[in-house]
Length: 102
Image (cartoon, rainbow, N blue to C red; front, side, top):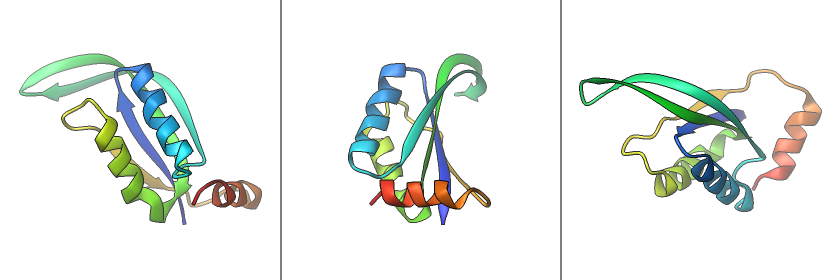
């Protein structure tokens, strides 16, 4: 019923902007930012980028709407947008997610 959705961006401002839109629309209950160093292959070249990983908690049924907002506001051609199921948690926390989202 609940998921953690993650996306990465190279801009703290972009991470904040997207998260604020999602929070204002009540599509996510919360968002946390973590500074990360990403290593990947893009266009057949090895790359290293300092990024921010944004993790958010929400209802599983809201994933498509969250994904749409991220894609509409993200600067990457191919943004990492993934959803992981939350299998266990406190009933109080789950109630808070439910009450904080549409």
